[in-house]
Amino acid sequence: MTALNRVPSLMVRAGTASALTLAAVGGTVVAPGFASEAEAATPARKALQVAASKQGSPYKWGAVGPNRFDCSGLTLYSYKKAGKKLPRTASQQYNKTRHISAGNRKAGDLVFFHSGSNVYHVGIYAGKGKIWHSPKSGDVVRLQKIWTKSVWYGRVK
Image (tube, rainbow, N blue to C red; front, side, top):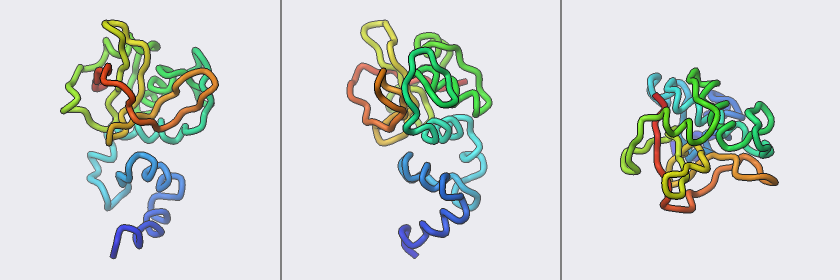
């Protein structure tokens, strides 16, 4: 059976919304029988799924959800739903994470955009060089390719 032939059964087993979320985060299947229970249950994976589920939610400065977000509000909300506590701002979140190299990044890690030592934006790494984030005023939560090399990675403890 090809992967395409399994899509309908995945949607039945994981639920339509879950299957669409899985496709949006690069096709990683987080459903019973398709991923290890430990992998499916990690806070990072859960936070990534929560962020993806907020696709299309409008940006609003200072907002922490559940329907509007700024960048750090989205990461705070997503990790809170996954059972982890983060501080409010992107720079505070950077200071609370375990810093990791780009080579060690995993889906669910935080991606911090910086200018010199100033962290100004954060998103959740989705894999394949992409992040879920709430970009700016007038925009919405979306999946986007990382557009600069001026990023640092952090793993939520």
